[in-house]
Amino acid sequence: MPGRVLSVASEYVPLVKTGGLADVAGALPGALLGQGWDMRSLLPAYPGLIEKAGAGQEVWSDPDLFGGPARVVMGQVGADMVLLLDAPHLYDRAGGPYGNPKDFPDNAQRFAALSWAASRIAITGLSDGWVPDVMHCHDWQAGFAPAYLRFAGDTRVKTVMTVHNIAFQGNASAAMLGELRLPFEAFNTDTLEYWGHLSSLKAGLATADAITTVSPTYAAELMRGDFGMGFEGLMAYRAADLHGILNGIDDTVWNPETDPEIARTYTRAALGRKRPNRDALMAEFGLTGIDGPLGIVVSRLTDQKGIDLIVATAADFVAQGGGLAILGSGEPYLEEALMDLVKAHPSRIGLRIGYDEALAHRMFAGGDAVLVPSRFEPCGLTQLYGLRYGCVPVVALTGGLADTVIDANPMARMANVATGVQFHPVDALAFGQALRTVVELHRDAKGWAAMQKRGMSQALGWDTSALAYAQLYESLTA
Ligand code: ADP
Ligand code: GLC
Figure: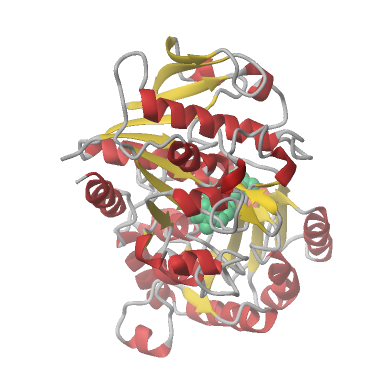
């Protein structure tokens, strides 16, 4: 029987986004709602969000939430109910959700507060009588929530902790234990302690009833020393409670048949209509004379994403007729390296530093291949957008990238099942070879189109995954 679920995350599309967490926290509740679950999503009321969500009704309050008064106001986004934690002393500031370019010094308190509020709502419910059966927490920002619940002695509400990226661990000084309202006796290696610090992610992983991560392969990787980032022991210990559930995409937003941002809409059956999007994208980036594949990158520019491998292989790719359009922002040294590439190949490589959602749509519509050479990738969404838009994914064989793309190896080509190109190990040599394969595959126009169409017919929406979450909630509350 579907019940009530409180979803807790620091980001939520369409209200606030820095990465894939927002896409998932924004889309999953809607999918579960469609399956009969009564969902409400709690997030901080960053500047402007109360207006955006038309939130008015106050449903919870606390005179002292980590140094100031707080209340929760309820609003609606589409069919989704959102609960905005309005605590001006914590969230009413410029600089994005975490502080940009530098993290806010009180992020530990800011997200402990989100977690505290979630735990109190779970225990006592909201003033309109709504009380959750399940509290679903996303990433370190919500990690203390299951722990606060446990420390309060509540076992009625079941908890799920979802790891979107184990690299973000929510570490804080152990001296903050009291200030963060955590019991001293829980500062041990089984619960809160992580290499002498406090870790909110560990708190969640240690105390939640169930743990999920965003792909089956990443679930397996998390138990290994080369991917677990210090948590491999805990993850292996909790293996029986750990589930890998693949992310979906919001296929009403990411749909080349209806996308209002792109030059010309197209379908699998009328793939020729993708071409004007390529022409428009080349013009937008000032690119000319590319008769090989036009590769795109839409990414945070960080080590995780393997952007240095793009830098290392670009000249060879261009020499073979390929071109590149890159959109992203991140590490200054990577931004500079990409700018140098553009200087060296101005008509073949284009770059936009920044964050631009509409341009991202135009890139998937216009690109022939999306390049995702990540060193690790819990799920990854851009390869899924690529599949949806006939923009063939070229991906490292890791995490969700391994689970969502079928490599065009000779056997898969013979069986007509390939949807992209995978490479391993994640280094410049293997990536360079993958790009050569892409150039070769692209020369065979018929085979390439068949590969595009297979990707476009892959089911990528939330239905299947939402069902897996629903089954998990049901097994916990049964
Ligand atoms: P991560 O969350 O690790 O950054 P994902 O692939 O899960 O990686 O999600 C990234 C999301 O952010 C995708 O929706 C992608 O399209 C979007 N994105 C990343 N960088 C940009 C950018 N510069 N402009 C627009 N969208 C971006
Ligand atoms: C994280 C991961 C990414 C995943 C996203 C949504 O940001 O880095 O791989 O797709 O969360 O789950």
